[in-house]
Length: 131
Image 1 (tube, rainbow, N blue to C red):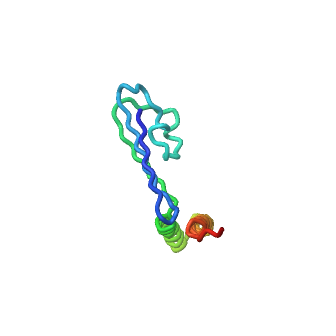
Image 2 (cartoon, rainbow, N blue to C red; image 1 turned 60 degrees about the horizontal axis):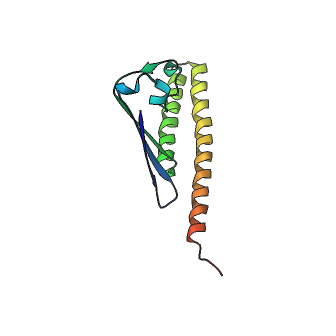
Image 3 (cartoon, rainbow, N blue to C red; image 1 turned 90 degrees about the vertical axis):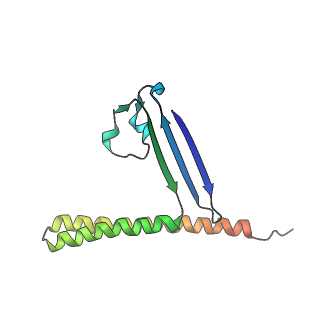
């Protein structure tokens, strides 16, 4: 099994990381958890793969990418909640709307903290040195 990681640090302090995992039949049986590190389902537990595979995993902390992603996902949950509310499925509607609002507030708070930290780091790098 070969892992190749490319990490690019942007000017604003954010990073974009791309990890490529390659497996071949010579590696024997490889755990599904090692092949797909981003898979969070219980379906990967106890499963193994033998043969050729190529998996790419992308990671970033750039607020310009993560914030629109949060808007879209929370918007989808909110739309499902409103639709189920109109269809008189009160409990499911309350769960979807509550999840959308809670996730939106929590994710924005986390993204704002990362953006603030990146801004502070950029100021400390750009600040003129005093002797």
